[in-house]
Amino acid sequence: DTAASDYFAGSYASAIAGFDAFLRAFPRSELADDAYYNIGESHFLQNQFESAIAAYNQVIQTYPGTNSVPQALYKRGIAQERLGQLDTARASWEAVLKSFPDSTAAILAKQSLNRTLKQP
Image (cartoon, rainbow, N blue to C red; front, side, top):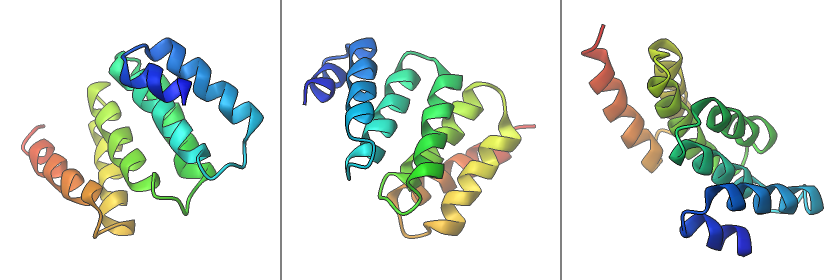
């Protein structure tokens, strides 16, 4: 709860530390995917896109059947786009559309694909 409070207060470094502590104590918790996702978001909001991608990858690889995966794929694509990695960003968004076509993340991924297809 403290980590989430820090996150919502914009204290991202404290939030990351809190989510890391939670994951060390409860790595198999049903909230672990959310903790990793929030670590990714905390890095993303600090423009630490490589660290955000690493956290999103943890969600995708370690917790494949959870509700955080579609959004992690989408946000990974946004972080990749911010790093100028358009091809990998598009691949992330295409993965959302293929694996989670009925998700909210799929709507956002399709919009991002359409937007970036107009770019070189």
